[in-house]
Length: 97
Image (cartoon, rainbow, N blue to C red):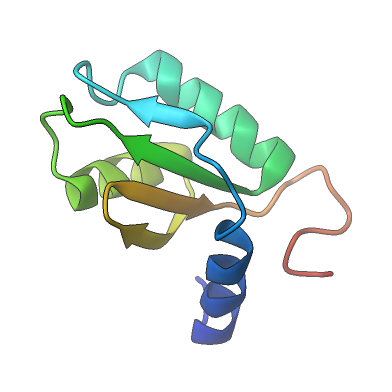
């Protein structure tokens, strides 16, 4: 569970990120969840864009992706979702720097 200081730090880091996943008409499919899991393991902090044709609400989509990947929702702003999950393989994570 992230505390408010960690969440603020991650939000600041996420400002510079560009979305690497785009949720569209199909919503949250298993292949996308697998890709997001891999990206979280490598990067720890990612941004996802919800396209206009996505039928899910942005907060609903954030909760679904978060629960299926075991990550935490850092921020939902507009149609963007920021997720964080500490890497199991890296010795030093983004919050440790």
